Every structure is written in structure tokens, then in C-alpha cells.
Length: 436
Image (cartoon, rainbow, N blue to C red; front, side, top):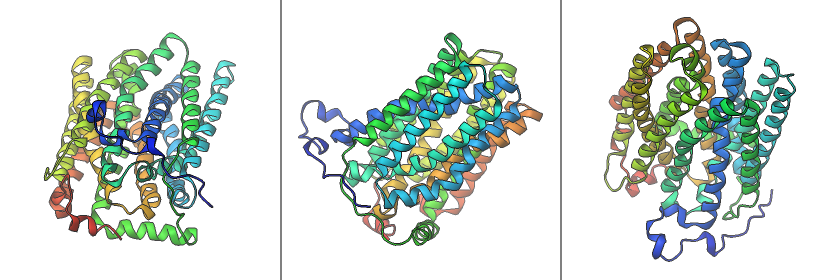
């Protein structure tokens, strides 16, 4: 496929550093990155509202069973897990901005159809599961394609900052997304929340279609050869594998507290959707602080040790959250979730920015496709969390996940000298080891 994207114009290059430019993060000095960032802010708001709150609330409203949240998680995660590597390979071969635009627009249309079924009173569980499967499959082409855009929007030395700014969007929206969804459901209707999410997806798709990116050559060779090349590269570089292991544990076990919020609301804390939205917002507030911390690391700051330390704090805070909620303590739980968000963001953004900085551009889509699998497991964490909560309660499910994360972080700390040696600004020799 011949790429039709022209070279970046002057608005996409760093302007002279004067006035307000001095206080802008380095990546935000690129005009088209700012355009992308604003579109991402809108689209992620709808994503957080829909997948992390509204669909789970609808499922629990239809059945009242925690285990059905697990089935919803399977429906979202399984197609994404199966197709993410394919999506990453296509992102290296085709124009990723159009893949993102198509995925966002199609997801929006699916959500509109689901909202119509709710409005007409025809909604059934199988409708919700089919919509979840479709959205999950589309995410497999959306996530690695978006991740491959950074070196075509900013210079390489600003990629880490661009990743941090993008993750800042996700963390800020942890405040606005769940809160907005909870308020819309409580004050208007669940279909209002769904239609709002669909509108944000359409906006994000439109923004992506009009992005101007730095040209690049498509990856040569057949698809299977490219798949093997990407997997071999990850296998040969331990640091990537260990970062992906941490992200896997977070998605599979650490995010259980989010997926089980409907259960915490109705059966543990006995509060409504609006208060649970505020509770999740506290996690988002902490995540902002963690993201800013990683984005401002300089020089010889021990980035690897900070990532592992934050993972241990995260797991420990989840244990404390489980204990507080089991006693019905709403306000202490909110304070603990602030720490949860801060630690979680510190180690996840630190790991993702490390991969983005080190991976060669020609392999970026495929490596990020594999990395996206670990993110796609987030809804799949509903499976183990839902079943454990069904029989032992939501606090037990959250505590189990926190314990696993602490154990894995300690294992990596003891095992990997590369992780311990990772610094905020990597030496040329360190970077050269990942160039091929």
C-alpha cells in the first residue's frame, strides 16, 4: 500500500521556544500531536465510560450476577487477544491512522445500535455479548495502530514525553469518565451514557482521518514472516518480556477493583452509581501524579527500580483497599484508591515509555501489538475476578490480585539486572542493544 501522508508542515515542528512554548511539554510543541492529543482526550472519555463502567452496569442490571461480568469480560478480551498481533502487523504494513478511524467509527455504530435496543426495551444479554465481541475485535486493530504513530508525530527524543502525555489522558479521564457515566446513568438513563460514548468515538475517528504524519515505508515481506520477526525480537530482549509480564499482571489481576465496582456499589459499600464514579475518580487523580512523575524523570534516575517499587506499592494498596471496603469504609477507600492510581500509573507509564523509546520503528507496530495483548486482558480479568467475587466476595478477589502483583515485582527485582540498571536517560550502548 502506498502511503499518501505528506511530510509534516511547519505547524507540526517545534516552534521557537518563547512565550507559552517554554512551559509546554516537549511533545505538545508539535501541532499535529496536539491535534491527536485533543482527539484522544475526547475518544478516551467515551472508552472509559463505556468499557469500564456502562457495559458492566448494564450487565449487572440485566442479571444481578457477578459471574456475568466475567462473561462480559471474555466477550471483550478474547477477540482482542487473538487479533492484536495481526493488528500490529497490519499497522506496520498499512496506514495506521485509517485503521484507527475505521475501528472508532464502527465501534460507535455498534454502541448506537445497542443503545437503541435499550431504549426500545428489547435488550437481552446476548445482544450485549455480541456488541462486546465486536468492540473487542476492533480494539485489536485500534490499539497497536495508535501506538505506532508516535515517531511520526514527534522526534524520537520526545517519544517518552509523548507517551506520558497520552497516558495522562487516560488517567485524567479516570476522573471524568466514570464520574460522567455514573451521573448520566443516575440522572438521565443508561442509554444516554452509551450515546455520549458513541459520539466521542465518531469524533476520534474523524480526527485520526485528518492527521498528517511523517511518511514511512511499509514493512516488506509476507505477513507470517513479519509476525515471526516481531515475536523473535521480543523473545531476544528480556527487558521487553519483563515489562509485558508486569502489564499482564496488572490487566489480569490488578484491575479487578474497577471491573467489580458494580458489586462494590450494591453489595459491599451500598452506594449508587454516582458515588462509585467519584470513588474511581480518586484513582484517576492519583494516576495523574504518577504520570507526571515519570514524564519528568531525568538523567540517572533509577527508572527500573521506580517501576518495580511502584508495582509493589500498587499491590499493597490493593490489599488495603480490600480490607477497607470489607468494613464498609467509603472515605478511607477513596484515599487508598488515590495511592492505587498513583502507583499504577507510575509503573505502567514507565514500562510503556521504555518500550516505545527502545523499539526500532520498523518493528513498532508488531511489538506494540504484542504489548497490546497485555492491555486487552483487562476485561478478561473480569473472569477470574467475577468468579472469585461470586463465591468469596469482591474484597477477596481484589486482595488476591494485589498479592500476585507484589510477588511478581519482587521476582523481577531479584532476577533482572537489566531492569535494575534501567535509567531515565539511557546510555548509547544500552540503546544500541535494542536497535536490531
